[in-house]
Every structure is written in structure tokens, then in C-alpha cells.
Length: 79
Image 1: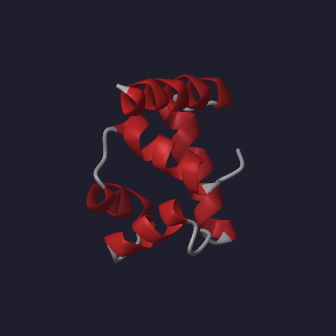
Image 2: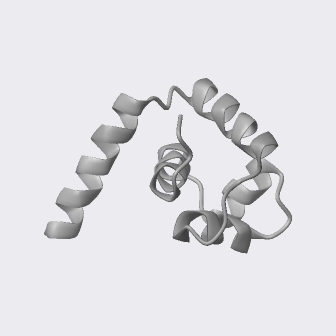
């Protein structure tokens, strides 16, 4: 998967994690790092992207799941 800021956020939401919880899951010390990934300020390292792929695979997070979640969020924002 391409770990765009949006896909990182969608994975986190799919897991039901807050930014601090997701940071712990991924093994980063500062939850602000997750915020920076989601804001597009920085990109996860190659090693972290590999870990994100592993987490996504374990959680059943696919491009199709991401697309459904993306659409759900857009509908909710429009309400």
C-alpha cells in the first residue's frame, strides 16, 4: 500500500486507535509523529512503512477497505 497521509489516518481509524495509541503500536516515541504523517509534513521511513504493511495485513486493511472507509468519512463530513 502507498502510505499517503490519508491512508495512514484510515489505517489508524480502522484499528480504532487514537494518535497516541497508534504511535505506541508502531513504536514511535512521540504521537506528534503520527500527526505529522497524517498532515503530510513527514513520511514514515522505509522500515516503518514495512511495519505499517504488516499491521495493515494483520488487520485486514486493504485498498478496498480504505476506499469504503474514505467514502464513509466523506459522507459523515457532509452531514
